[in-house]
Image (tube, rainbow, N blue to C red; front, side, top):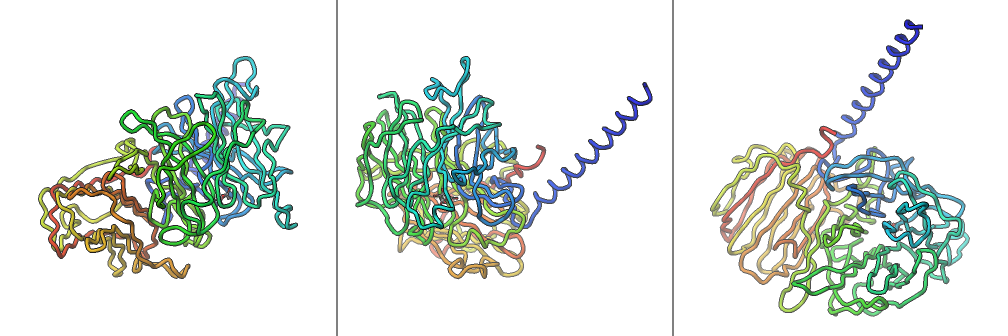
Length: 511
Ligand code: FRU
């Protein structure tokens, strides 16, 4: 008997060892794939697009996402799932929501139903409720116009398993081909849920007391903002600006972005529980780069508004040269209101938790830039870095990442046009898409003479946050060999008062 037990024990130890070695090995493999982001979330394998259903609950940040579990190109959508305690390190979780007879699972949101308005909680349980679009492919193929409907599912085990509501869909399509991506929030003043829904070329707001019955409140946007493409993935929330509540409406559009393809515009304004009224008449973009799309914010994070986007663009998302997986997220960013010339703008900066992966910082002061070899000073680039520049007087400059193949990615500022830019024309493999090898620009919004600019560089992406996040750009790129050098050039002899060069640890290590 004793002998039998120890054999079982040895067998299970060997099996355990075998499986842990296999999974450790495969993790090392996927972690080290050529273009695998090291400080951004990506699925270990297969396709992802929009981040979905982000919600904070019991110390855990949930990130669901549009996921195709059996291919690295877009297909029948599921909700993939990842969790984090700090927004930086992510744990891949099993696929959360699967397609069913009503359709595949398109984008949406999730809330913590603290008052159990839905009644899904039993004996004092608090349900998490996901609100998403059921996309009926058969109906679409048959040429119908009502193939997208809103449905709900609930979880009583903190997001691990989800049960779809038997009464789905909860919001039926009135005959609008693009009728999707519900973002739901609690509106305390009238104690109701508000759903912000993308309805072709405008937004429709709905309200509900219980997440199950929805009433149309109003429409917004058909005559304002950018309309170069269909409206998708909206988000409505408020931010505090010096004691004043400023409402913000994010709307992704595809195509029609400022530098082509997909991008996210925003409106600042008022919301009274029924209608949204914009303060602005011009079009503004949350991020002017080509690779930040369909982003929304986490729910249940109190006064903090944390945003994350899909770091890609529908123009080429299905053909970018990664193999095992396709798609990643941007860095999580904290949103804030800034006022410039009496207008409210939304600024975004990487969340403060990024400091958890910062290693050695090198501080260099008073650089009079002509052709400055930064990596001669810091050592070659051999992993992700964050570079922060502070200047009292902003002048044109080029920040150049390069490799020994002569490939380069240039980011910087151009004073004559007052624009920041990212130029990926010579950034390596660009052949997968005509139009990928381009220079992208963002207007400078700040009127200050000086500027603080943060650049976060990962294996295949760069994020530029200028003027404390007022002008933002995110671009992806695919060098044939990793960029390992950085030069900064300035014909106008930009004076950098302070340059901080900070190495970033991979988020996949030591997990
Ligand atoms: C945005 C989007 C959404 C839709 C989802 C489908 O990228 O087109 O509108 O719900 O992707 O995967």
